[in-house]
Image 1 (tube, one colour):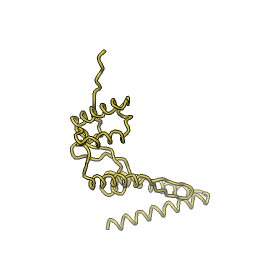
Image 2 (tube, helix red, strand yellow):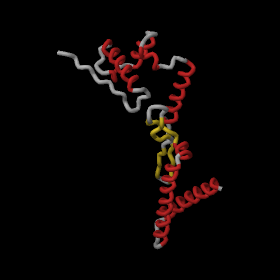
Image 3 (cartoon, helix red, strand yellow):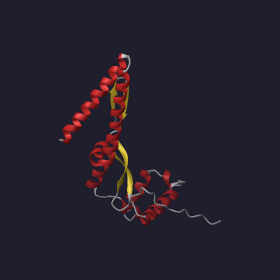
Image 4 (cartoon, one colour):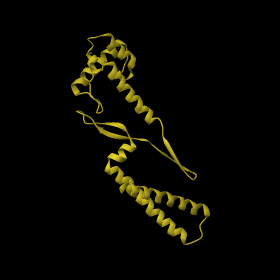
Length: 186
């Protein structure tokens, strides 16, 4: 029986051309076969790198950055991205805790290969993306409107002190935010 040759397909997020993906796939299949690994996704990255590093003529060698200084910088930048993504900010309002991520997952343009999904700092998104800032502003205006309705509703009858205090704190926070926005706009 003739062995079936697998089709090598470039993944959408790959930073390589279709032709390069075929070369990469063929070489990974060879390494997997030589090491009796059934699926290239199960290959140990150390095993693959050792094969490439040991052979100066290895076809995968051209896909690596052998400039130590540049490669180290790239590694440190990727590590910094992991550092940023490893923490979160929590805001506590009364008994409620709200977790706010400091990064968002977003589609980011690549030079030649469409887009890729990456973590983006929320501050950058807020400052550079008018549509996102507009969406946040709309939600804040909705909160302000809902708070005004709650204030009107609670003024009509006796309300527990805890609710009145919560509404006062929310109003103060929104007024502080609006004043800050007004100062930044001026």
